[in-house]
Length: 386
Image (cartoon, rainbow, N blue to C red; front, side, top):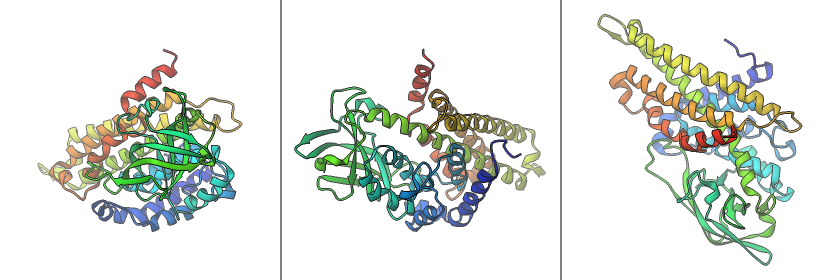
């Protein structure tokens, strides 16, 4: 059943992304997952389709417009490849280009955005720290002014795209402790004092490039500051909203794939003289899975409409509470659906090389990344004025 929100342009975009996934990603996900990385050429192919360009001006290679429904479509359809690590490796740059577009000087935009938009170079956002996790306000990395430069010291971890990216947006403390006093900086790979190490041995997202970043008297010019001094926290929080919408859509797409794979397997597999799908207990599982998925999709459509209304020149406000609630609900639904899918598959679902096995391993990262379930609940209640 076609959504009332999916107009002709959005339907065409969905078809484009779906064909891209079917032809360029799904046939190779097992190989890439085992290899621990995706070929960089996939970034160039995605760039040619404009998959990195939402909210980025055309003069920098972007699409020149933003549409939250298309962002949702992108996350959902990409995630139906069945390998969240591939999606993270491919689209991790999307969480750092927003601050560049909205806050960076033109010189930095011209330097980095066209390369990222085309897929020639990658970008990464450096916010999370080893001792802080989702506690952005507790950031310990510092930037100290020294003449015409800023000197950055500290570390970041769990940075998606951190090893292969060429450009980074990094948060550092330039003022007092707490919410205020955080600023954003543009840092290029290879800058003296800036190093990276690969984070390996992950439970899931094997093909996602994940790194720790280290800054040891890393000196960047004063012009590398993005936005106003000590005003980075608000920019980070605004950026997180769209990142979380992307994570919700990823949970939705992954849940849909689990359901689709479960139905196909249950129709093929026979037990006790009849197809598995004919057993009432399996049919009830599928009904419950489908109902929960529908609830996430309906909620996400409402959020996408509200985000569009709150866009530039819009009349509404960013639905922060709704985004937070939808994120923890969507990841809980994904966890439930992945578990039920594995039960339906039985032993076959426990073997490497199946989408259900991979998604069961990967499910927890969506409940942690972009703000943990616990943080989402707390933020939602505070946004409700309680």
